[in-house]
Amino acid sequence: EHVWVGCQGGSICTFDTRTLELWGLLPGHTQDVMAMTRVGRHMWTAAGHVLLVWANCETSDPHVVQEIHLVGKDILSLHASRSGKFVFCGSIAGFVVLDAKTCATLAVGSVDEGVTDVVEVVRGGSDHFKDSQAAPGAARRGLKSQQHLR
Image (tube, helix red, strand yellow):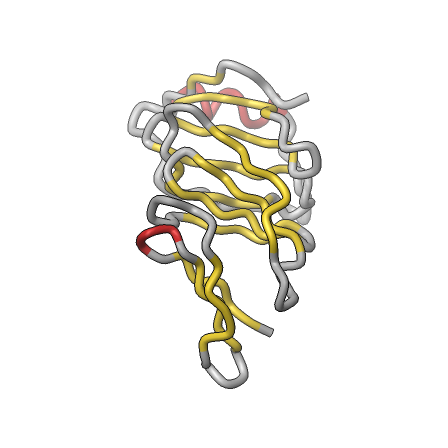
C-alpha cells in the first residue's frame, strides 16, 4: 500500500504506507501537481490545464494511458464520483465533468466565484440527485451550466 503525493515542478512521489519510505518518483507533468483522485484502478492527476490518467497505480510500474487538455482551465481540484462514472474538475474558470471511462466532456459550467474544491455529498444513500431537486437551489447560488448531464 502506498500514497501518491503531488509535487511542485510536476513530479509525483509515492510513499510506502507501512515503512513511510519513498517508494517511487514519477515524472509526468511540467507544472505543479495541484490535484489527484483515484478512479477504480486508475489515478487521475492534474497540473495546469492537463490531466493525466495513470494505469497500474497500485504497482511498481504506473504509467500514463491518457492525457487530457482542458484549454484555458487550470485545474485546482479533482473528485471521482462514488459510482466511479464521473470525474469533476474544478478551476477558477468553473467546472468540467468528464466521463471516467471515455474521458469525454459531459458538462461544462461556471459559478460566480470559480471552483477551488470539489466534494461529493450523498443524501439518503443515493449517488444521484434528481434534476428537479438540484436545479432551484443551483440557480439561487449562481450556477451557470452550458451543458447538462443526461
